[in-house]
Length: 209
Image (cartoon, rainbow, N blue to C red; front, side, top):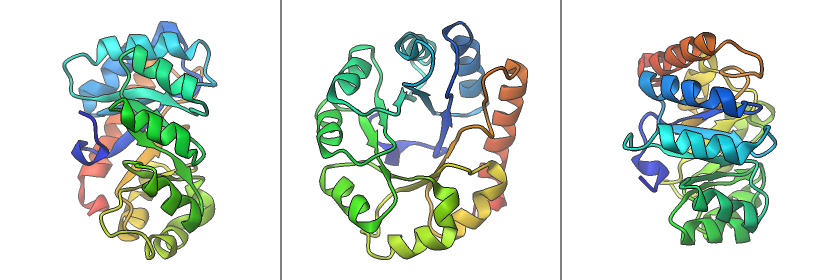
C-alpha cells in the first residue's frame, strides 16, 4: 500500500511517546481492531526502534506504518530503510515531500493555510494534514478546501477525537489523526485498544457519513 487513497478506514493512530517495549502489543491490537495507519512521532523515545518493530508486526497486513514529526530528508530516508511507508510532518517541506514520494512512501505534510496546502499538493503530497485542526475547526477547513482540487484528501489532526468525526466529515474532511484521545504515555495497553475499537466503530457508523 503506497497511497492514502487506498486506505480504509482513513484513521491514523498517532502514538506520540510510545516506548519500544510496548509498541508491538499496541500495534498488534490496533491493527486487529481495524487501524491501517500507525504513526510514531520522532520525538518519542527511541522512535526508530519502535518503527522497526511496528513494521514487523504489520507485515502482511497491508498497512501504512511510519513516522510523524519528520522534518529532514535524513529522517525520511531512515524510515524508508526500516521498511516504513508513511511520512507525516507538522510542516510543509517540499524537499521532504518530494523525497518521500520518490521512495514510494505515502507523505502527509502539515498545513494551516491555502498557500501551504497548494504548495504541498504541487510537491506531490498524498493527503493534507490540517494541523492543529481544533484552531481551524470544520468551518475553517471547509473555507480553505474551497480553493483546493476537489479530489484532495484532507485529514484533521490536533485536538480531534472520535466524538468530532461527524462535524468534520460534514465539512469534507476525509480522515483523522488521533493522538492523545487514543494514546498517552503511561496508558494501559488494554485501554488504548479499547479506545481504538470505539474510534473504528464511530468512524464506520453513520456519525461519519
